[in-house]
Length: 374
Ligand SMILES: [Zn+2]
Image (cartoon, rainbow, N blue to C red; front, side, top):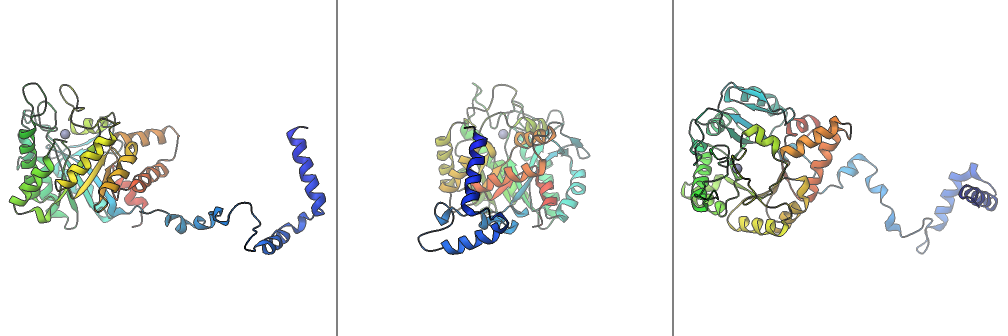
């Protein structure tokens, strides 16, 4: 017997047994349900706990299913600050994102602040020739783009939370994230000394939060101690890029910041993509060294690490950086018709929150300010 015959046969037999009362179906099915809701029998197969749909039929009930719901206050918007005061350059590999000089900043930020922008993270981009040297001395130049931007933003926006990324790679002639020894590897003591000085200068300039992304061992402790010495530890958040993985998702950022290493790569200090245990050790270390927030970067490819961070640092906020490559990939997918941009922006971010983050550094921030009501 063919499958369609079998189906017809069975449905015919059922109609015969029920006296073909299809016109009374809705009435009858309700009657059957009432008759069978005793403690030992239900009209559906399986246990009553199999019935989930009612819990998320309404949009609000669906929102309640999330442990953390995305709000504007969870978002940090990355800004690339050029040392050319009038620059406003579109970064081709990073859709809708620009590198801006100081004179262009407030015109860009005013409407975003009006829509509820709560926090930004600043990356300096020195373009002037001759600014870079082996020690990254320009990183904490008081006339440099980051310190000038911190002061401008503090003056202009009373409520904007300012995070300063702390690294040397934008400022070193070799493009690595610290000071090098003769064999081209990182000199840990000198690098930590320099990174902690830069972090302290950013905090003294008015940054609410300093976020070292260099990955040198021991820099969290050094920064915390210098903030204490400077008398500003009590009003400065220390956010550690604890688990920053090396990989191929940073290309557009390096285009934006001009921070491609002149030789080699960063695999000896950023984490290997498979290194879950190593990431857990780095997270525990940074918690013990005095970090206030643990950050994971990139985000969507490392949701298990975000989840680990929430488990290891359950008493602290966890941040995730949805990096330039993730953002560009979502735009490329939407452009190719694979999915809708807004739907995927939400889905990817909700995945990050579900994994355990409550802070998301995202290039989608201006879009979310339009899409979210709170
Ligand atoms: Zn760096």
